[in-house]
Image 1 (cartoon, rainbow, N blue to C red):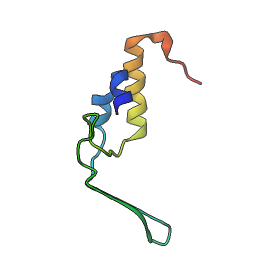
Image 2: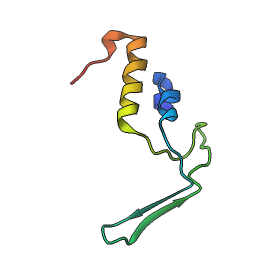
Image 3: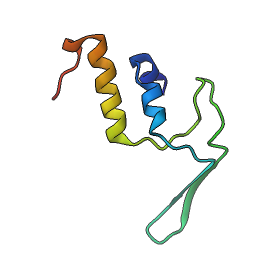
Length: 77
């Protein structure tokens, strides 16, 4: 989020993101592999520790923010 903030896209990305207090990662059989509690807390950078970011919205927000800064700085590869 701090990188997106520096690019001017953090607010737009957060508008389409979801926060959750707990994350559980399970394998295909449903066995718990890893769990995080307290993910809704604010981290040292001033943003929630964990976010579920919608990738297409994040890409669009980043392209828009970068286009406003310098149109020749953004290149499609």
